[in-house]
Image (cartoon, rainbow, N blue to C red; front, side, top):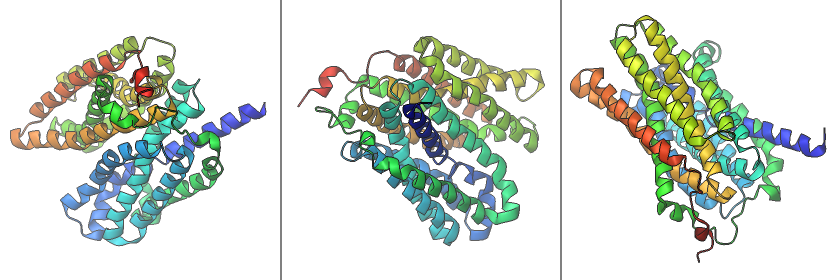
Length: 399
């Protein structure tokens, strides 16, 4: 194996390690929030903020990080992001209620930076393998999410909830140490070329960028609505809590197939044709899911079709950030711009869906809202899969 190949494989493994640190540190908190709430004496609203704070911080940090990346090295900013995660995770585990909320905010700053800049890193270091590396990046995040949901509760029996939160600091520390040599390399600078400054502001004037923001935002809203409310909907239809949780887990596992494969296929197939096929699965799954109301084999067909659609959105957006940009700087800018809007949608969606249920006393009205968002996502996705670059060439030469 050549030296160049060895370096590429080692960098790819580092990308996977960094990706693992982007979700594991916060996604599993929801499974142990009852234990945290009981020990620290938090009310329901305060406990809910543990999962809401990261989404708000991501929406604020993503665009800022994309702007700063045009001044500082991507490598060094990713190193700083890992330090934020390490400190934040430690604070959450060690210093009571104040440490819990402060640490969550600090940790979210680190994850927000990585959300914005990992796309630029992939574009910079793997320009000829964007689909494959994007697939590994998004799949790693999905796998760590599923792993956290599965192991956090059993682990609390041995190390308590503080130990469960603290153990992810070990993963962050390992990433800091292993990424440190890369942070100093000039090749990871990713500085903008002449005419590329102010890309984020130029994105705001691009109709194509707003379409991609709409796609990212609506698919995020759908995912978080499903994650938050599917078990409740199934129990409302008469399913037991255990069976409802099992159905949600099965859907998440099946969705990994399209999370992994869609970016790879998008490098070789028609973007629009592939996304439309996945959207058809999504809509069909939603209809079958609603009609079956948790009963019969038809329900499981709906779960499978839903899963194939759910796994498509995020990984397709990540691929498009790179594929529709002309440089690493532009990839980071479009990532920051669209993810800012995406996390606003993600934070608002589950709240709106829950509020509709509170007002109507039925999940039927909430499902109508969810269907409307799904149709909107299909429309945005079609416009987002245009082959042209997000910004025109003249945008890189204007002074």
